Image (tube, rainbow, N blue to C red; front, side, top):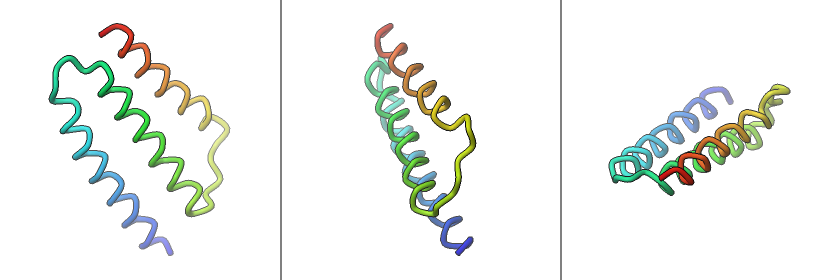
Length: 77
């Protein structure tokens, strides 16, 4: 079970790394930062729900912080 979860985390990290590399090379970042932040938050949410992991009390705030920071960066660009 833990090996499967570890492999899925590794796979999500690989996909997010490639996505981030492709999106964040383009200038200006604008919408691309928002897409990367949404993908990161979505992957984390998917992994937590898939493996029935109990998130800590700060998890919703962390997701909002990531999304809000990306939104602010997009508005600035």
